[in-house]
Length: 279
Image (tube, rainbow, N blue to C red):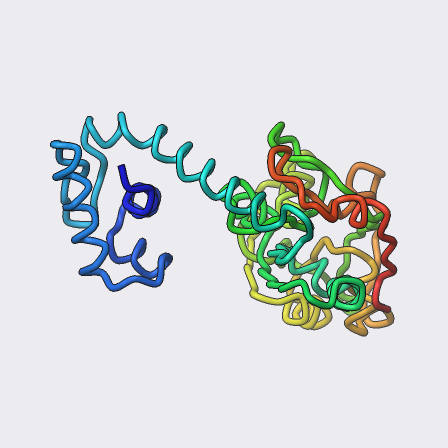
């Protein structure tokens, strides 16, 4: 059975859409459709029901999915191991937006200096997005906020991060939380904190950047929870009122993680690396 066909099948099943899978794979939609039909012919069963909003797995497709996913992952793992058998030739790095603001530049500069022939790629997103990408073999290592609980993941290094609640110094602050998009660990912690305090009537406004969030906080639109170094880095420290919280909320380390079954050959280097925040 052609593993390339299985990879296409897995992507279509995950996205429940041939067009979205084609975009992810950077294939023409017609190519993906043809490959799915080829796989269905090889197996002798239809794998997807076509519906108005996309596709869903048939019973045969459901039966194939877990095995196909495992095969695809094993092939990717083997390819990675063979490619980096003697040295790390490439490294796909995932990073939260907060870590990208604070320390991703010195991290990449150090890697390039110490491994000049290594190909580097950077992907950014929320903690949830980075963990998902790591588990799906889309990145090799990732910086995430907080210690991950997933047993498939291994912490290679961690960096202290002290967070606080920030609001405007001027006027009454409304019951509004200004957060990054869904999947950001700080956003989740802030909302959980408010709910535990019995405050569930707050309004949530989502933004795409920390600069925007802090600018709106300064203008008195609401409150946010962020690492103190980000507020300093972006130049808002003197403009905002800082409210220190208990240790559970104020000490959220940034962790550099990888999959336990997919440890980079430069893991010792990553474990011993020391990085300072870019103030």
